[in-house]
Length: 440
Image (cartoon, rainbow, N blue to C red; front, side):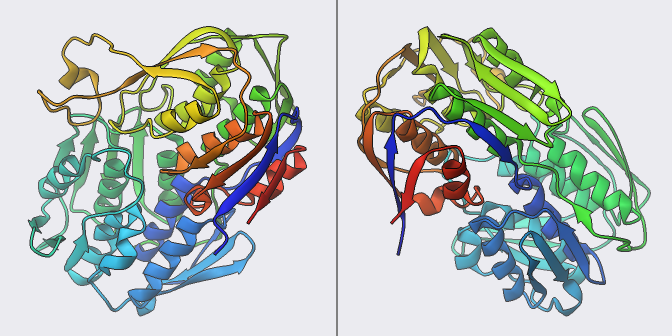
């Protein structure tokens, strides 16, 4: 099986990129399509490994789901006949946890295993389970099987306040509430644009959902009605990867169809680093100045600096003048790329950062007495050289490919199927920017 890239780096990469649909919107929209009692068509769906795995999982539940064009899929939930999610399929993709919503709606009870996906930290499953219970779901975890067993005796009702925002939790509770009794209110919700995209899709289909910052109100409806194909928004995580890639190599980039407000804090940090950012009818244009300046970041949920962006930012900072610091607040295992970057000559190390009230400061479930490595310092600029790199998680994978393209000489990047879980046509898009990359 081909699972490696051979990259010859050291070239200045420039050009334009048309972004694929957002992975983190498409996956949730596919699951939300199972709430319907008729066929649903979604457009601008990225043809990536995670989407392919999810469609396979849905078919294992009896429903019909497949691509009918390059980026267009059709889901027919009317043949859904299984309420137990296969353990092997679910282990490959974390979004499988959101199947609670359609399965409880269709069957009244279901079995869903502990989710898979990238191991970048302990996701806040307990917050999601608490939210489900508050809306009337009876749920328990069976440790001997690894499955959650859930039952919905009546229509969802009530309200819930997240103690810390949860992207997945917000979307799952929205789906659960669509057919709820009376008005359901969710507080302290996540604010990502992908959530807005999901709400637009559901409202287009007859749902009654209003969102005001972190407060969401849902008035239950009897059913959803498909009206016309719904288009997935562009992938801002993919955007950040190609921006950092071109800037790290000294080049420039034109991005099409991306609203600047969806990456506002990233643009602010780029400008602090001396990068020129321009809006035009053609798209967003990025070009670095003669020198990049070191800029510190800390990750927070939207509208803050996203955790998915920091691995690629780290690579770009290896080419910046001075010392920069990255403080990861969202996940506790997001630095798998650090030792790999050292293989290329990067000057990057873990440092201690004094934090008062870490339980409040971090968005993951901080456990007192445990050792955490949440902060790195990068000293630049350095001349990176080729090496053999191994991918451990999706966003780290993109950053390692970026680093290889910014390095002199030849590199091998192994485990690229992990990267391709979230990036469509990566080799082709890099090649169009002038990069020398081949999958083997």
